[in-house]
Structure formats: structure tokens, C-alpha cells
Length: 384
Image (cartoon, rainbow, N blue to C red; front, top):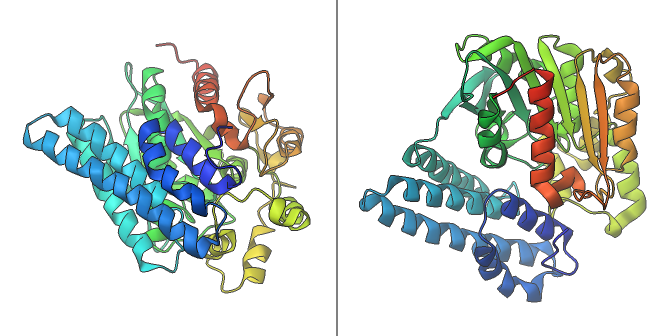
């Protein structure tokens, strides 16, 4: 993996994520070069500096977008608004959940994202799907070509947002004749930040809400709706597929078989464990809605595909990086083995000869993007 900082995995992961979603390398260098001196500092010092550096980039992109918009260069403005939204989200992920600035940064990113979609004239609809006491913010993108088309529902992971998935996947799905619904399910994105919906064990309920919406759309074939989840979504998506039988396929982009195993590995590794965000305990409290770290970890230990994955009957693809520093590679094999009743299952473990060895193969995002999109197209017999 490209590691801009010598010893800061959360920051390096964020940088590679940004680059995979459309960041400009010189922008990244401009933001991060001044941070090298404090990369090993306490997060109380380093995280605010990280947020300031990336919001500075976002502000610059907004100014440029506004100039383009004033000159009626809508597509150019849209590109810059979307990249500015990406930078703002990269800033926001390092801010503690208890800091009021986090929500302000998120709302600002969403405003830029919406403006970018509008100005670029993307074939995308921003919507909210009712769920529980709130709603699931989502982006629907129709397929190119024939209709009605198969559709893939995207769920996030532990610290992911739907906008990352949209920026990286929407165009590739559409070109292949696949519609997509990028959703902030409970415990992530706007569902957590705007509606207070914390993570759920029974992810099939949020999946059902998405399917209920999709079956009413003329652009979607209700018999060909699948689901995909990355990272912790490697639990969320297979769990949903196990109990929501309207799902016609499932992808675990980075397996997550049992959270209890991950917590034990993390405890054994101590400071050597590769946390995805600088202050992971704050993140887990926020995502789960727990009032103590003990209660949060107790919730997390219930996230397991043991005695669950054998209920999956639809086609299943599991993709895992062979040198994943966050989730052991054997979670891919365990998920595959447990899903013994899937009528068509496939396990892909990517090694150094392939690239994509890191967590969710973020070090070679295009490789796995194509692999996943092609498998979905093949599974639903789509040829465009």
C-alpha cells in the first residue's frame, strides 16, 4: 500500500481511500506534507491538524467550483464540488463524534456533494428511505441500456459513507447495465449522523427497506436485486442475504466473519493493530450507541456469521486481501465455508502477484471494482 506517512496506518488508509475516489495527488501532498512532523503525535493534537488541512483543500475546491458555476461551466463546477466533498469527508472522519464540528463538516460535505451531482448532471437521485424512527439516506443510479435492470444495494462498513461508494462504483455499474443504490445503513453515514440510527445486528431489516423502495421503481428488475458490503459490511451484507430472501446475490468485499475474533486479535496485538481511524474506541461507541466501551464490545461480539451464513442460498462472492492488516484473511475462508447452501459461491483471495492485498484491497481499488462488477453482471446475465 502507498504509505505517505512512515507509521500512521489510519492516515495512510485515508489517503489511499481518497486517491481511489478521485483525489488529486498534488492536493494530497499539499495537505499532508505539513503534517509529517506530527504524524506520531497524540490524536488530540494530530487529528485537529488533519481536519484543518483537508478542510482547507475542500474550501479551495469550493471557490474554484463557484467560479466555474458563475461562468456557466457546469460540468467543471460539478467535478470540483464532488472532489471538495470528498476532501471534506476525509477531514470529518478524523474528528471525534462528540465534537460539534464533526456534524458541521458532514453537512457541508453533503451540500457540496449534492451541488456536484446537480452541476455535473449525473443520472443520480438523492433520497431518504424510511426506516425505524428515522431514514436511510441513499443515492440511486439507474443502469445504462435496457430496463428494467438488476440493481445492487451497497452497505457501508465501520467508518465508511455512501459517497465513497458512489464516487468509485456508480459509473462502472451503470456502464455494465446494473443499477445501484448506495445506502447509509444504521451505524453509518447520514443514518447515524442525521437520524441517530446506530448499528443493528439484524441488517436484513434495513435491506428490506431498500428492497421495498426498489421494487416500486420501473428501472429495477425486482427479481435481480443484490447486496454488497465492504469491511464490516462483510458481516452486514451476508447477514442480510441470509434472512432477506428477496436478495438475488451477495458480495462481501472484505470478509468479516466474526467480530469477537477481531476484538481478540486487536487486544493481543495492542498498539501494533492497524486501526482504521485514529480514535477507534470513540468510533465504536458512536456506531453502536453504547454508553461504555464494555457495552460497545459486547454488542460487537454479536456480529457473527456463525450459524447465520448457512442460511445464504443466493450466489455469494467473497473477496479478501491476502495481507489484510485489519481482518485476518481466514475470515474469507470461514465465510465461504459457512455459506455451504449458497447455490453459487466464490472466494477470491488476492496476493502480491495480483495487488489488492490490503484491507478491502484498497491498495488496488480498480482491480476489485472490476472483479466485483463483472461478477454481478455475470451472475445476472447482463451483457451491455
